Amino acid sequence: MKIRIVALGRNTNGPESALVKDYLKRSRTIGKSLGIKEIEIIEIDDRKQKLPRELNSHLFRKFNPLTKIVSLDSEGDVLTSESFAELLQNLKNDNWKEVLFLIGGPDGIPDEFLMN
Image (tube, helix red, strand yellow):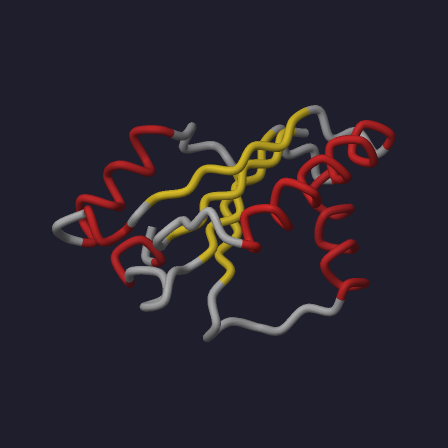
């Protein structure tokens, strides 16, 4: 299974960036033993997109429409570490080849995207 993490919002080269790189390195090492073949992080500066519709078309043009998309937003359900691990296991057991985690920016995820 491939995992793609799409983060909306401004990327920075601050301490958060170092944490992301460290977690990505750890995840790639541990993920191989769990059947995760690839982990990729894609950052999209949503301020550069003129309309949510353009952001929506950008994402769908870039990714296979058969990919399982999981939206992570401050308005969504809170997951414990255990429930997040269970979610990953269920996705793997359901034979999804690719999972895309969409992380909302400061304004969340555009409604137009969530409707797809």
